[in-house]
Image (cartoon, rainbow, N blue to C red; front, side, top):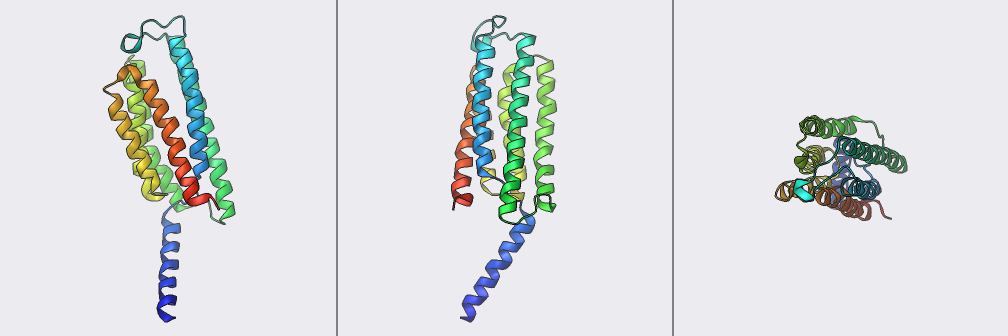
Length: 207
């Protein structure tokens, strides 16, 4: 009995330490929905790129008009805003159910460590767009997002690390297939988010 009580105490202490150092209210369902948003955005991007009358050529020789680029940036922005809003709403809902605080030391560290690689990549990608080096945009968005996930994973659920590593691998692979950047983008931000979001949901949230 004493040994069992001792083990229970140790388990409780570990859980308390884990809660204080990690943001565990991250919602797997928000990852699934972010993947769905990304696939919808990829479809509209595909129509913009390959059915735009001002776009010429195919794959590596494709020439995209300035107007089409603006539309693509708007699509990407809407997907990003919808994903962030969904993540915030569902994480707050999950935190309330488990009586956890959303804005705490762990969540602040999570956001800071996530934003450093993401913001760096964002500025670099905008520079590439300004220089019309569009072929590297899709691979680099995957790589920098993956780095952001890996960097932030130590302050949240460990599965985020594997999501980040998968994103990095897809980004590096897509550098060999620059004409298929949109396909890799959809596979990464769409398929991987749905896959890992589902794993997180069934592992941590489903009763």
